Length: 525
Image 1 (tube, one colour):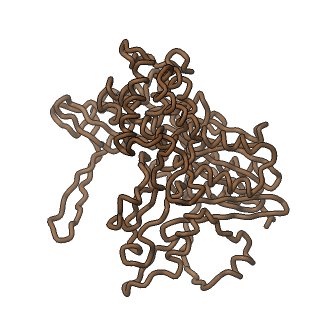
Image 2 (cartoon, helix red, strand yellow):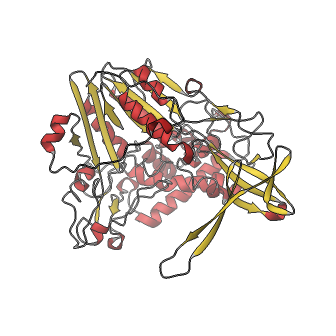
Image 3 (cartoon, helix red, strand yellow):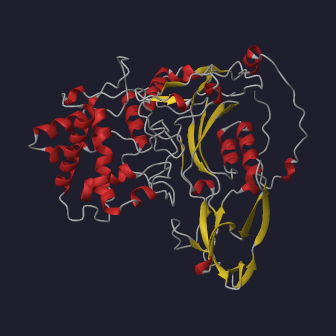
């Protein structure tokens, strides 16, 4: 994120499928030749020597085709696989220059012109002192040949090459929507946008919980409202559990399945009463809602019963490495059947009665809860709050860690400062992202707030074992989501400065950047 002149911006993941795997046809007589556009081509090759401390050096051969680096060989079938990426390393300087221009812009038009020159992919959120807001999916998005399925390897023989890149206005974007709100958490930017080989999204996506919370605010939203909303969003634990959701989507079907059985009906109603937030309002070290315990126990049981039992370990092989997990949305589609917005084409029920299967999952869930928590009243179910460990050796069962399903998880962190006694070994997990920030831009008010956990922005420990003075000053603030003010004007920065150091850096040949640059604005602050 950044702030300049009268505007600010935040960059998110754009969910743009900007890379393809190409399958190369190899010469049977020479594996380093591949067939492309009606003739054999030699691969570019180089050998890297990787020196290993205390061991023998390792040599690694790297080969390239016209599409990119060769990632896999299938010599038995005479083919290799290469990876083509838009906005590769040769274009990185262009993205750097585009971001400089985003800060130099003096109005939205100039800002948009700078965004149009980004080569790396981002979701760009914009706001200014005039109250204008905008969003662009930006970066190089390849235009693929007709008939190509980006989920599968593309034939690399030349008939199915990329035909160019989409222009900014051809990609998802919105300026000053009627709702007055733009919400972006690394999402699919619009319903008709293809995610290609990337994550799938559905009704239960984590963002829907947040949008529901935002809708409850209504009317004009103040800074206090946003900070409160951030606390609620954090308490969904959706940062590290991208498949997290709330029970409301499933309750109608579970009620129907439990009908006539008082025990199962009680279990379902417990789930129905949980709002999807992990809260400990009374501070007793246990989450308040018994429905949380019930739903968290039921969800994986249902996923296995309705989907995993049918497709085996593909349930995990397809989904586990994805940042955004699709499994919960798929489960709902299977349960909804023909009522789903996009009914599943594959028959996951395999002739089974839906209500009978759901009833079985509730029975199994109830048995698990009894085994884990005893025979007491279900309304007495409570689980301990979650903790984060900076020294994992200090783990105790009484302080559990939250389940993590995110590819970019922020689970346990081996923080050298904690392992040397310079920082806490563990803290209570608030469910939020590692970095939390807030920016407000108005003609009479410009403010940025931020907090970073696990040592803030400086983890330095000197050879004598002394930590930087700011090593731990944000850890507890992050636990409490107590954001600190970031000065935005030079006078405030100078007033807070403890020391300065001037670095003399040789000038970069900006003219070498092979991209059109937006004109340098004049005047301004």
